[in-house]
View: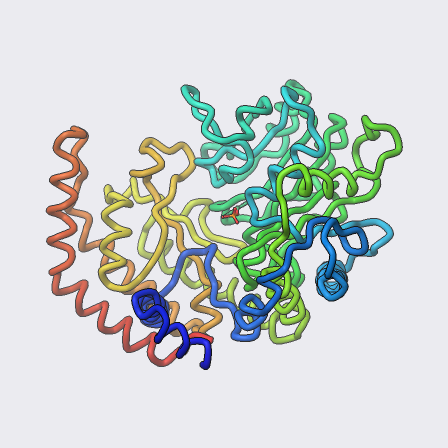
Length: 457
Ligand SMILES: Cc1ncc(COP(=O)(O)O)c(C=O)c1O
């Protein structure tokens, strides 16, 4: 409270922006699956004095003086991270310093694979992530794609889930050094056991990126990749409900590969890849917030929360299936639902704007066998971590699904012109019409009434 008052006086312009965003987050239905509301305790830790400290290096081996207390903080965070996922210090190392999920992945790949060697990763339009080396036939989009030869595996065209035999055939033909799994829009559980076996058969490392489902894995509700993977990365700000950051777990001794660098500790290589390989000083204030979130995730109430996250997502998926929408893979095992809007001839770009005019915030997203582009894709992706943190349950999810279905019906008439010249003017016209659409306004009012009953932390 005190610090807010100081900011208000010292920098009213910035203070007003924060107030506006606070109001927005309070009033809307935040349904982007990668977002959540952290606790006040997490926010307090993130805004603590650790924001002032440089601490390059590892616990007990720092390149800066004055890190006696920082060492205590990082050691506690590491201990909690290993304990949350039931891991022993003798088998696993956890690095808590990666600045976010993308640098965490880049660091792991650079530690395990030499430039020019091959990695296999999940295809982005099928739900994979940019940081796994995304590239277009005409353009190396990511740094990873410029360094390594990336081969993508895809979901089955009919079921839109993975065909592990097909992944194995691909792996046997391209001989990857590393296989990455993990999705940003894949609604089903990944079979980590099978992925680990495939890696074993071809002598590759297996990296499981559980950025999205980390909290569900911690709660024992999604399968743990730890028994099968050489390294596991995760973001801390999605289902795990911490501040924006990442955790990187690495086995000291690889499971599937004889180390190409003698008896060197694999985890040590990953630590070196994070610092000094990729980063400078770790964000100790974020690490403090992560430590709080990890302790919260160990509470029985977190498991209850995670269970409800999945129940809520299933309610949404079922409602869309019943309303004859094309729910990718027919449902969900976790916190997210992906709709392919091509079957109802609705533009995802327009649908996402229409929903936002009614204060329902989702992503537009690519879908398997995408025919659009990343900016004008064919799907929308929605998730339940944030609304579940607010305490919403089955009844609220049914109402939300009804509103969404109505809004999607409302915008089915619009079609984005193929002609790029006409497109911008058309989209401006559509946004103007949507902003004054009385049905969207009425639903928006109902959303505000609902969100008022479920305070944010
Ligand atoms: C599977 C996956 N990996 C990595 C990331 C990257 O995380 P960040 O945005 O923190 O870089 C994401 C983010 O959505 C993700 O979904």
